[in-house]
Image (cartoon, rainbow, N blue to C red; front, side, top):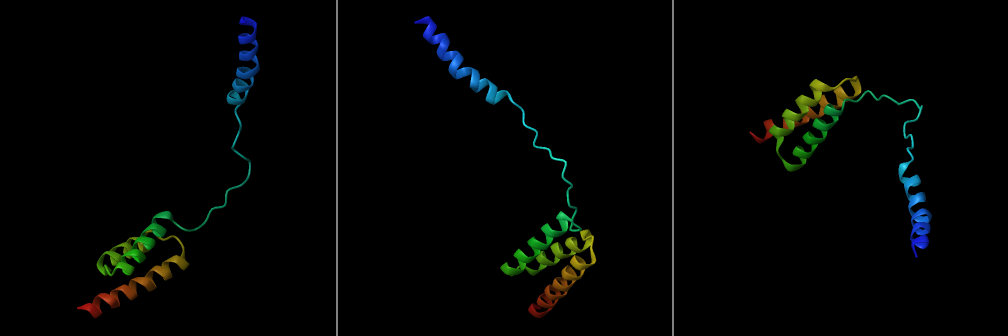
Length: 95
């Protein structure tokens, strides 16, 4: 009886301990691409667009200004400034 328990323990627990104890390296030597977009800029741009869709133009203007201040590339800067001008026109139209 004891021999069966020992055999079972060796047959089952030994492969489990080997499988759980191995360490795989998930770090590769591949190069990482760097994009010119700032995450804060994109987040504020998204929030600004969300606020425009809700009709909350003053909050959208604040987030567009923060996105414009944190943008790193010219393409995003022109996009944000275009949307900022559109929100300014919407605010002026409502007054």
